[in-house]
Picture 1 (cartoon, rainbow, N blue to C red):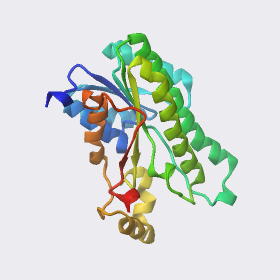
Picture 2 (picture 1 turned 120 degrees about the horizontal axis):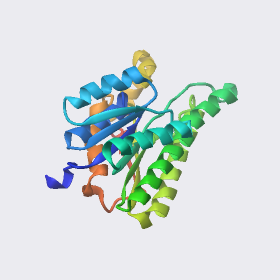
Picture 3 (picture 1 turned 180 degrees about the vertical axis):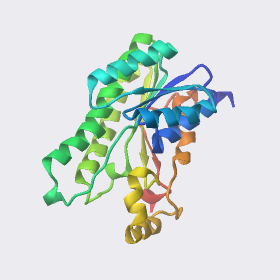
Picture 4 (picture 1 turned 30 degrees about the horizontal axis):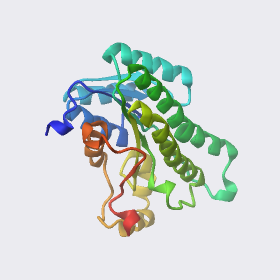
Length: 252
C-alpha cells in the first residue's frame, strides 16, 4: 500500500546494529527507506550495514549516545550522506540487575546516562534537524513495559523507561507545532543479546512464558512493521502515544 511506502525517506536508528534496533532498520529498509545506523561498535555496524544493504540503502556512523560531540558528528555525517532525516528511532539502551538496597550509584548513573539522557540528547538533535528542515517528521523512543510494571531487580532500568515515557509525552506536545510526531514503543520480553541471561535461566524463562499470553518470546522481526507504521504517513495523527509489543503481557 502507498500509505506505507517509504521511498525517498531517511530514517536513523540508534543502537540499530543488533536486537530490536536492527529489527526496526530491517523493516524500514524493506519499506524503501534509506537507513542510517548509529551505534558505538564499528565492526557490528559494518555487519548490520552489510545485511541491510542486501535489501536497500543503508549506512552506519559511530555514535555514543552519552556523548554530544559524537551525536553531532553522526548527525552531520548522516545529513551529508542522505540530505535530511525524516524519522528518528532513539533506541540505544542498556540494562542491569541488582537488588535495590545493593544498587551502586555508578551502575544507576550509567543506565540513566544511556537510557534516559541518551534518548533525550539524540531526540533533541533529531528535533532540531527536523525543525530546520521545516517539513515535520517522526521521532520514536524505545521504552519498555518496565516503565509501567515493577521490575524489582532492575530499579534503575525501570526508572529510566518510565522517564522515557514522560519525555515522549512532553516532547510530543511541544513539537506538534512543527508537525513532528513523538511516540514510544514499549517491548515486553524480547529474545536479544540483552536478554540472553533471562532466556538461559530455566526458572526465569518459564515465568516469562507463563506470564505472556502468546506463550513465546518476542523477536526483533516483531518490530519491523511497527517501525514502518510510525515512520510513515499511516500514523500522521498519532503523537504522544505508547505502543506495547509484549505478546499481551500487560493485558493479562
